[in-house]
Image (cartoon, rainbow, N blue to C red; front, side):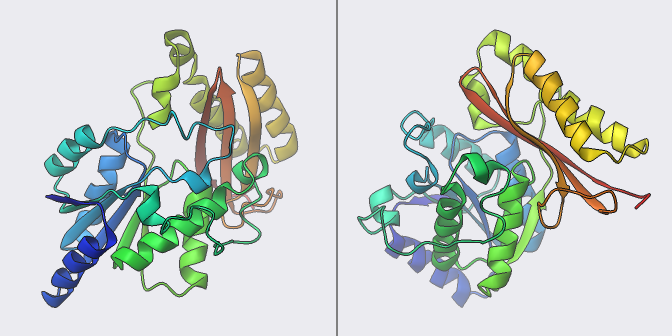
Length: 285
């Protein structure tokens, strides 16, 4: 495995792979890798000959009050994990390299109708930053296939739409959410939790499961279920950003006849913002 930090070295390696007729897979990450990230590589492996993992804490997807400065940066430990997982190349650029010296670059990628829903409503500009940096990675790596986790379902949906709309010749594959033994979705931000908060955090997933079970039992009053779930979480010490039962295809609020459902939540526990979701089919629609 090799690590490169500049675009010229990356492009040279990509060119060599192409000359050899090799297919390339890409796993974009912000580093501080856990088992969920490594599962992306496992998911990519059947689809390609070479795997590229990018490690870049992207400043343009963080608001001024968010944790960009404190976000854990663990490149050396990440390199060891990636080499053991069979990664071929790590692309770890600086912000100066990625944005050509200007993180306030004039060009932005906007996926309308999706970017301001759910997490986008409380994190304005976040998904513009995500879409822009991923489109840059797509142009630099030119992968045949790219893999994203389902834990951030909105991000996955938005990037699928971007790939379609901008005619990137890339297959997007998704990887199911990797969970701890108690159900908590793996996240680099879990390490921010205090021991007491960590003990309480699995309530997020249990609440999703309760609402899923209510739907499977025939409850179609989705707004009532959203209110009930928010109340449960708030009483358990969370500060709920949203609890939403949405159309899994559009991310718009689900109706009683919506077939493919996304049950999604974002909530703060102390200073840590956690997200999670479940999908299901409304078989009675």
